[in-house]
Length: 315
Length: 315
Image 1 (cartoon, helix red, strand yellow):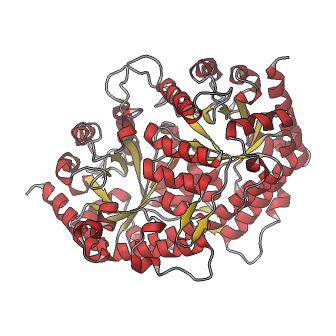
Image 2 (image 1 turned 60 degrees about the horizontal axis):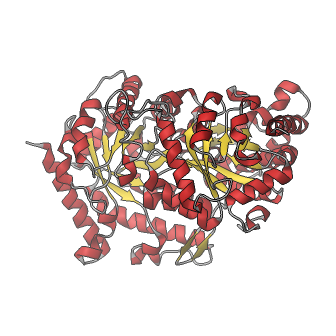
Image 3 (image 1 turned 135 degrees about the vertical axis):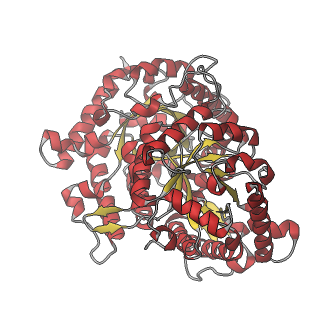
């Protein structure tokens, strides 16, 4: 598929992110993790009669995401499709994901593909081709999903992240490396205490900061290599900011998982684009608690989050 | 797609694995990581004229994998498709992956999907639906890839592995959790020294052993929760076996990455199915060093590895 407005800007990811945050006055990332059994009613009616269950479910999922983007997108700076929710629908799910990404780009939103991929060098490069750069084959060019950024997993170490970083540079895209996630199980590995002092996630944070500096020479207020920092443990944010001064933070865990926007101030130290607040269920299912139709409730909740996060910038 | 012979056996993964290893007298796992630019000549001619580049490349990739399975499969117990290599071809790549898995099952081989997925609870469950269990939607049931086992990433901790374990139990499938991988960068995170002593990978190894015991009550010689242990650092295998006495080890890194079959003896302590030796490029590209046609060279190299690994059992 062709690359939409947001990637045609020609600048790298950090500049594009800062510019989009400033112009849209939003740091809200709309999470898209559609469950075929819980779609908005208008979307559930949009299936393709005659198709296979996967095709019909994928069409309805795509319609749901488009409605959600149309309703909540104006208060957001990006969408974060959860790749698992499309992948489980097989090939039609991947077709739906590409369509949803195109819809978001056409609405002026960045696309952060939440894929959490991670593998050794040659395999990491293959994942990066699918998500970021595409590949040339003897039968012609295969286009990528064309995400503006992807989430990646650091367990295998720096040499498994480098191919993603190289692909990101080539595509003018960004990465968000898992550092300290929002789930209780983060205590098992990420919080493990190191012999040299500190937690494992702090070691990973340093690796992420170096990777970003190596990519752009350390210039500029914001790096193209971001970090996933769960909003459910805000006590870590100040330390994370110290270790990763130029790193954009992707902050999941607001709403359904218990995190509060008001606790996220340290994320914004490098500027308004230093923290991106993701929200999924709390927007898509806002009508379940607030009442009203799904679209209006989603728009209102996204706007409420936008204003709350933007107010943390200070004067 | 329907589930083939190997999964219809009705037993759990551990029993099925042990039985397949015994009957095929092989611990060799045929890695499938097809590069569209380096397919066997007979496969490269098998594309679909008139299709898109992705469709034509995916058809050729599927043909390549089928030829490789036909040639080397008789000396192997399983195939390990590298999901990234299919994913980068978009929806047609996922169709090709399903076809390759079906071809391998029809040949009596287990299918270990090398996906290295990992995410928080609800998302991990979505990945597991796609790979292992399928899901029910308002439009009918969507079938899974139907892998016999999948590789998963432990960085997010135990609660991110539990949904995969639950799905594996439901599907009679297995997991292979990344513990200590074969790449040099494993030193960055996996080998990090812990305040409590030992390396991070040893902490993960204990978590993997517990997860396996929790899944089956600790009974039986072999667990359904395996570990990925790179064959490039055989000095760790004895310690890994101590920490994970019932855990099947998936051992990548033989051949192109420098590991040697002869160094893997500790893996086989729980029995012949305790170690699975994966080889990809060294089989698929054997003709490049040995000469001859690709299929004969692949068959010969797979058989050479099979005999070398089987000889490590002792009398």
